[in-house]
Image 1 (tube, rainbow, N blue to C red):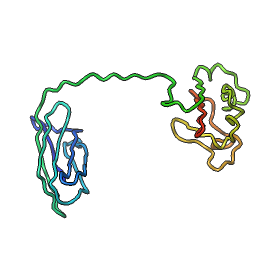
Image 2 (cartoon, rainbow, N blue to C red; image 1 turned 45 degrees about the vertical axis):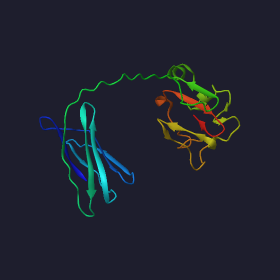
Image 3 (cartoon, rainbow, N blue to C red; image 1 turned 135 degrees about the vertical axis):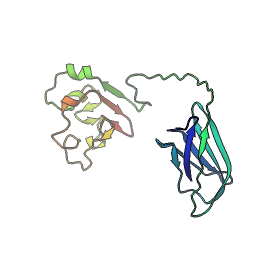
Image 4 (cartoon, helix red, strand yellow; image 1 turned 60 degrees about the vertical axis):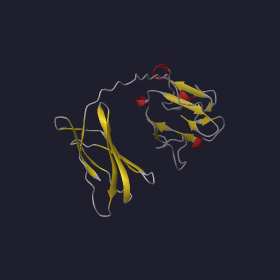
Length: 194
């Protein structure tokens, strides 16, 4: 199934949503329009009937019903979307600094300012983890450092083989303190985050 959709004035509708639903059994397929207003929806169940819907903010929805699909044939349906007056409701987004989402247990957050002001003796992360009452080096609440989950910009950076004394990839090399902007240490029964 595929085709091209335009709006008044022969203008391509980039980013519009296209959905196809097999009305008798319920499978739902979807995609969005390419830069030239074309769309492909492949690998659908043969038969039908299908209901095809084009939608985009500020344009009227176009709905085509009773579309049969035959094995080995590509159904092509082009369409034109007209303008519509649509009033969108206001969206308010609120956020709080230092939130990890949900509470995972005791937590310590160390800011960029804390990192810049605090003296470091060994130039490694244990100089900062000592701000956490549960920490003893890279061991938290008596757990082995191999139970730590160390994330750098959201990517895991653990010592998966357990070869490094610090529990981080690269052993003694670790992560240079020059790139540290903040540190969060969370303690829970299921994970440790540093």
